[in-house]
Length: 261
Image (cartoon, rainbow, N blue to C red; front, side, top):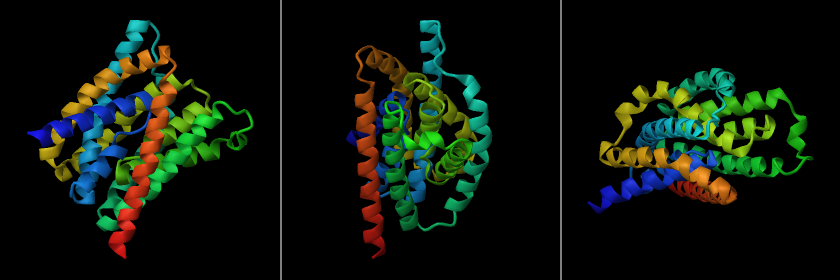
């Protein structure tokens, strides 16, 4: 009973953080599922499918917010080129994970989370600093970011949120709230193809409750984000998510190294 409530709360909180920051709840899910003893592949599969449901609920909710405000915050025209680049690399990532040992998956996950935290920090700084050096680098860097976003998402269920946020918020100068909403709407599109592939790996004793949690959180998150915007607290959530991403990345990296020693 308490475990079920805990999984629901985990899904709800992770979804709220993801909906208001543009990050991915799978960063929290994969780490938590691995720490409770699930095989890394099962952790990734469960997180992947859970996240799909959460982002789908969030997409509908952001669309509802746009109707309420009479100004759609999801910039749909931004999605087509992102989808076209990412989707093929999502498939490659899903093929690769079948051939990797569990400790290596954990190691890769830790490294990627540290990289994503760096990009999240970079995105935050770039919006405020006109001399951010990566501004001088043009489309090839954006292409590489989206390539890695797809590859990492297919392989370990994380990457598309932070890296896509970097492209459309930092490089394309879309304001933070619209960037978050657009990234949320983008993720179900590129992950739907992976749901049937990861479905057999899902631990349903966990997912039955995390999925309900992320659906509730996904529905509530955009409205909470709207309230946070009015109180100028959006950056607080983003900073919390950056801290969690970095901490979990270091924790998973240390765990994998200790297991391989």
